Image (cartoon, rainbow, N blue to C red; front, side, top):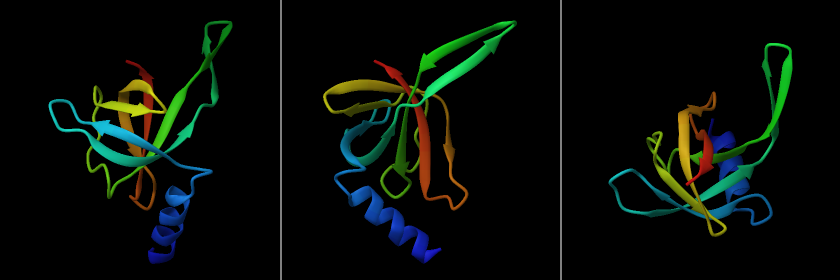
Length: 103
């Protein structure tokens, strides 16, 4: 697992992949963290209809954000977002993936 953690450290340090973000837990103090942003399109089916929507997801390292919760705030590149839904951890328990919506 040490090799995976070292690879993730390199990934999150790479300025082409990760960015600085400010994470603020609800009722807490802001913390500067590194985040990998993903904005995949999502298709949801509702009966016979297929609905296309843009999504915003961030990967955050557990060493920087121990317990993200819905409603926590993240600012990245001058935009503010709130975490929605339950954050998910990767298999190695090193990275959180959070879904966001504009604040």
